[in-house]
Length: 273
Ligand code: UDP
Ligand code: MN
Image 1 (cartoon, rainbow, N blue to C red):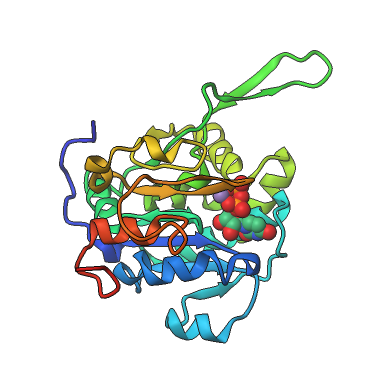
Image 2: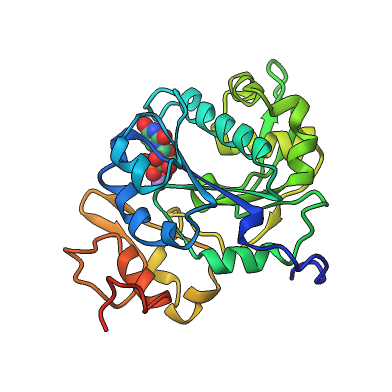
């Protein structure tokens, strides 16, 4: 499935992992990440939030970035965070930019292993779609189709090679990403697809190992967990959409991420032995 094995020399330290978060989730979602997969990539993971929190700043060795974007779920403010994530990646000099949400669990070794199959010096946009046809943009009065494009679901995570990120620089850097979002009036992940597929003319490469809560998490077989890059969870009314994994009591671990972490990395301190 992947490109033939050139450039297998990349390591975790070549990856810039950004996690979009907010003050609303600082005491619910963030602590779960800090306890689990953050521990596997402390130097590479950066959180993009909208508040100062001294304790979290200490726990992450200063890896909480206050974007000064507003704390809301509105398009403009989510695009604001993505814009800061992208700009910080450019400054970092790393070879890969990988974005995730704060309701993702990232299987860090698998992420790195998959990236090793692609060349960061080529243009790559890796992720997973959640819709069955591309986004279509129509011309106003006549309703004729102007163009269409695919995008990687932000809530499943996606990665962009440095080569591609640099090509996007004139249209997306220094906050210009926000203007694009506002111009087409689409969410941050859709805007990313617009920039890459429509403006850059580079296609999304489907990597089905990324997962968002738009899928049914319980359908993922445990024997494949090790091969997956990301997982997610959501709660609708009283229904949890979570990974089906043995482990801790659901009252203690409703998201199942602690159990998933122990399933993958049983030697962690908090895991039962
Ligand atoms: N988020 C944010 N500000 C908000 C609400 C959400 O930055 O006011 C972030 C949140 O931390 C997460 C992403 O946006 O990384 C998606 O949020 P959520 O999972 O609540 O909504 P979804 O879009 O998945 O339904
Ligand atoms: Mn979500």
